[in-house]
Each structure stands twice: as structure tokens, then as C-alpha cells.
Length: 585
Image 1: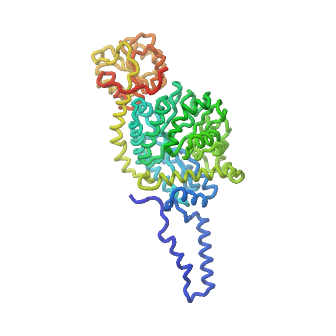
Image 2 (image 1 turned 120 degrees about the vertical axis):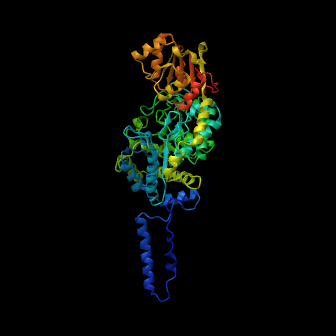
Image 3 (image 1 turned 45 degrees about the vertical axis):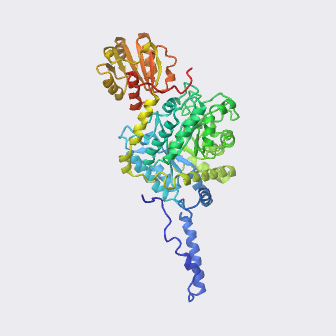
């Protein structure tokens, strides 16, 4: 494929020989005038946005990053350390994002779920690839030809922001249940391979939050509660992404696993001391830093028993500079979680103040889920502060240097993700055929028989007249029809008079738990005294206190392959090989 990055014109240097070799019969005055006009032309070219320094220059990354930074204005440096999401309109991306890219040379964009799924139109993965290509074309026209970081959250399991034609991978807890680092590596690799087809060059994964609090909102996004095992699986996942050309980003530093609160709505306060944090939550980050992971996401989390007190870790210099960079030796990019989250803005008071605090604390990229208007406070105030606050200016420019180095290392060369994705590849290569086979194998290795009271499992198909299958997905009933033809079903898993009447008449209830609301339904079943089998797509820890449930088959995700593996175990056609990846309380 032809190199689509802008290259300097082949005529760039054709004027130079004539400057030094004036013809013998040309008066000295004419020669001086030529020098004058050439100098004027050079000065004008700088004013018009043309630079002799290019991202494509064949110079070592650290040296070229320094050269570009030295030639950058403060506005250009500040734009490089922003990463924005954008609203998707019926006609395409909102104008605000294209303005930021074309007029300010924005450093990065973030693909959210709403960019690939909308109630008003069908999912169109090819359109996303086309949009990303359009963004990169605008970026490559900039003064230094610097491409965009294009990021997303594609963890597998419950978090899959790029929908449409991409694979539904089982996720982190499934890899934790299988226990094989190779499963984590190939999960990262095949997810990365699909992202690369779309032109997405950065993934906010792996999630290495530990499953220390069983009510945590992280749930099945975690590899488990063992710090070393989570570190090994996180390293393997990150290496898999890198093998596909995608930049991995470990999250959510220092660790989101010991709180039930969601930092989108609150500032979680985790009451553990630093010694506990260092020997538990920070172990995966210590391991990843040693392995050279290129990026880490800082979380909006407070640890009152540490030196940071109640300051969010994403705005704490102690956490980011002293602990992450100093004590663990991390040398890559630090990126904030979405700055629009309440956990970030509650203490700062505004987006612009939260952004300044984040940069001063040591973050190198501020990420936001929306695109601000060109003249909003987050730009106006930070640019003004660069002119008046030397420390802040130094922080921003140092961050821009780090961003440039990562871009130069990952966005150039044969192994780099194509900057301009080819829509035909999207049609031909998504979902990834090899990846689909692997994700099926992982689903089989992960399925776990958590509980089997009264030897309910295997559940015989001869009992169909007394079975009631309760779920709310077509896949669940498709598998029911295959394994237990003739068994009755109820297609709404919320509590209702109709459901309770059917449940009272059944001998055994098979319930598909794929969302938290299903826990209320299981509680409603308790007085009926029926045999209950649960296929759980969530973390099975939510069922630990439900002693009236007879059997629990954990599949850890809602993919068809995981559900099919669960049915196979339930019918006795497959041995459950997975292990619960955390200590049962």
C-alpha cells in the first residue's frame, strides 16, 4: 500500500544551489535581492504553516520529537495533549471535532460506543473506518504531518465500544478462569487485529483492577483477585495488542477493584493504606512498568489513608510522579480517564481546573468524552496559563514530547496500524475468522461449575416437561431449542405476575443471569422452593449469598460462544474446566 502520510515535496531543496552560484554576469545587487526574497519566502512559509520538519523524517524518535517540539508553538503543543470523543450525527461526525483537527492539530480522538451504535440508524463499522480515515487525512495536512492517536475501549466481555462487525470476546475474567497467559495474549492479539483494520491504533486495555471487593462495579472486567496472576495476564494481553500494532493502556491506576462506587458518578474513596496498596493493587502496575507498557490510565479514585488524602489519583502528583514514575519506574504515557466524569470534576470545580490539575499532577493526555467548542474555557484558560505559569507550560510541553515519542514509535513503519483504513478490508476481515475460533476455545476453557447442589447438573433433556427457561435473549432460547426441545420458556426475566405463575408450575427453573436486575428475580423465586439452575454471564460472586440456588454455571460473558459452552456443561456434554479466579467469601 502506498504511504499515505504526507511527504515533503521532491522540489523542496531546488532553490538552494542557485543561491550560492550566481551567474558571473549578474550584478551583485541582483544577487543580494535574490537572497532577500529567498529569506522572505522562508519567513512567509513559516507563517503559512509550512515546516521543514516532518513527522516522516528519518530521525530517531527521541531526537525527532525534540526537533518537532522545539518548532511548535504553545498552541500546537497544547493541542497534542488533548484527546476528545465526538458526537455522531446522521450525516457524519459533528463539525466541532473536524475543526479541532484541521485548525488546531488535535492530538487524539476516542471512539465511544455511540460512534458505532445508535437507535436511529443501524451499526455501520465501515462508516467508522471511513470517519477515522477522514480524521487522519485532516491531521496529516498539519504543519508537521503528525497523525492522530485513535483510541477506544475494547476490553472484551462487558466493555466493547466498537460494535458492529467486531468480535464479542469473552473478556478478562474468562481469561482469569482459564488461567492460561496464552489466552490473555491471544485475546489482546485478535482484538488488536480487528482494531487495526479500522485504523484504531490505541486500546484502553487491559483492565488490571483486582477483584478485591466482590461488589465492585468492575466485575467480570477483572482478571481476578491475585495480584501476580492479574499482572501476568495483563502483560500477556498488552503484548498481544502490541503484536497487532496497537498501543495498550493499562487501567485504572492505582486500582478500581476495591469499591462498589462508579467514578462516572462519584469520587470513590478506598480506605486502604499505602502498604496494602503497594503489595496488592499496585503489583500489576509494577510488573507492567518493568515490561515497558507504553501507556497507563489514571483513575478518578481517592485513597484517604495515603499521602494523596482525598485528592483523586488522576490529580495527585504524589500518585503519578512519586509512586507511578518514581517508585515503579514507569516511563510511558499517563492518560486520564474521561475528565467529564464526576469523580474528576467534583473536587476541581470545573473541567478546565480539573484539566490543569491533571497536567500538573503528571498526566500527559487529558481525555474527554465530548468535543468542547473551539473557544470553551478548557482551551482559553489553559492556553492563557501557559503564558503566565512557567511550571504549567513546562508540564504541557514535556507531555507533548512524550506524546510525540509514542506516536513516532508506534504510528510509523511496516508494523504500524494503517493511518487510512481500507473499507474493503472491513467487509472482508471483520469479524476476524481466526479470532472467532480462538474466542470459542477460550469460552470452553473458561466455563466453571461453581455450585451443584442435589446433583442437578447434568440436567437431563428427558425432564423437559417440568423445565422452565427464563431469559431475555434470542440466543438463550435458540440453545434451549437445541438442547432441550419441548421445554417451556419465558422471554422476560423481570419479576411479573405472569413469570411467577409460570415459575410456580415448573419443577426446575433455568435462569440466564446477564444483568444485575436478574438478582431481584432470583430473590423472588426463593419462596417457591424450586430447583434453580443459573447460567451466569456476570461475575458469579453475586450469587454467593443465594443459598437457595442449586447450581451455578459461570460463563463470565454474554457472548453466544460462552452461553453455548454453559449449555453444554449443563447438558453433560462438556466438562467444566475453568476455575473461579478469586477467593470465595
